[in-house]
Length: 282
Ligand code: PAF
Image (cartoon, rainbow, N blue to C red; front, side, top):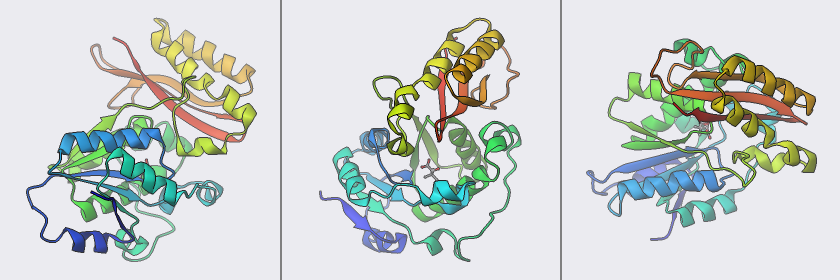
């Protein structure tokens, strides 16, 4: 079946009238500039809902989650490439929502603050004030439009995954969130829509954050290794925002025995801010 493309949720819903109401809807929300990591999400969605299900991808660059206006302005727009990639990964439909479908009163300067304890206070939240308020606002609005059975999120944005899981636990009890492992370049750099902005020097050094996280995850003396890897990164010209081993659910640095842990980090190199995370073997 050819990919269906809609420039509003309203059009998608009209086209779905008469569709089998028991067919499962799998949803992949994105901001476009799709790469192989997104293709993994779409492929997984297609595998899980099967031929009778419907895989819908949304593409909307959400202004309320950008704490840096320049980052929003520079966000890549690659509509035709995105459509080809979505189709070859197995999407049934791609929707480009109208802003008023997500923000009926107009896109606000500020959305209401969200308080999910440490999830919306630590790490990314501390370094990007308001970011998760915007993510929660748009993801809630997207879920209300699509009413999916399952929604797919990349593990690359580990804290976003934790925040969205908490939103779903509180407000969408029938929805299943499916985390999908990070797709990496050969040298370990996590794929990201922003990687197209890297110049040669930045691209050359970009995989160092992943290497540092792997070393931290493998270490027995975590605190010492975090200090060592942070200073190696700084010596190589990085500016580290945070590097830590945390409880994978609460994101707290104080964890109990037997909990799943994650090494997480954010750092600037050249003009670019990178985030990444890896599991800590137990
Ligand atoms: O991860 C993203 O691409 C965005 O944060 C999301 C989930 C589509 C919300 O705008």
